[in-house]
Amino acid sequence: MPAAIETKSIDVHFKLKEGKKYPKTVDLEKLKEHYGEGNVSFVDSKKKHFSIQVRKVCDTADHMKEELWSVLEETEIFKTWEPERIMVWLADSSCVYLMGDPYPGSMGQPKYRQMTAQFKGKDGVELKREPKDDPLVYRYGSNGIQQVNLERRLLTYTLFVEFTDPGKAIRKLWKVLNKMEVFEEWQADQVFGVRIKDNGQCDYFTPPEPPAPNC
Image (cartoon, rainbow, N blue to C red):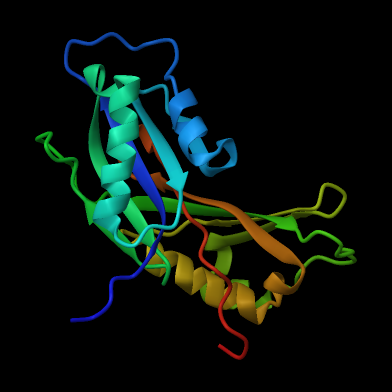
């Protein structure tokens, strides 16, 4: 039997329960106490949905979900919200979809129309020029945009492409960025996709490690 692949993070997308009023805030203090403030991200769509991402290494996706659920139950979050989709990112940059059991009506895998990958300059590295985007233009044409702010040490890639498998789409982009030698001076900060439906709701994904040299 093959060994289980360790997890890197879990994304949970919630929707407001039928008949419940949208609360002013969502209390995440217990999550931050348990996992550390830097390992918890929160995205509020203001459309009766919100998403949380927790970064932690666990031995299996199921164990990661079980641990997170035990913490969320202490926050009483399930009284107002119900999970509609759960994604667990593994150490090999693949993604496992877990439905929002025991709650019915999970939406399954959404379709996206845009991806944005944001990078920041590596610590101690002097950024002298922006990456040459020839490989980006060759692969994505006018649907791939590079934006650079050397003064603020920020680099952003926006792709106007449709995809349903975030892991596969990100790996394709990473291969292009590797040809552009982006990873020598920049490190990924966050990656998110914009859904075709759901009022353009954004889902945040865990940036994978850079491709191996000569990949």
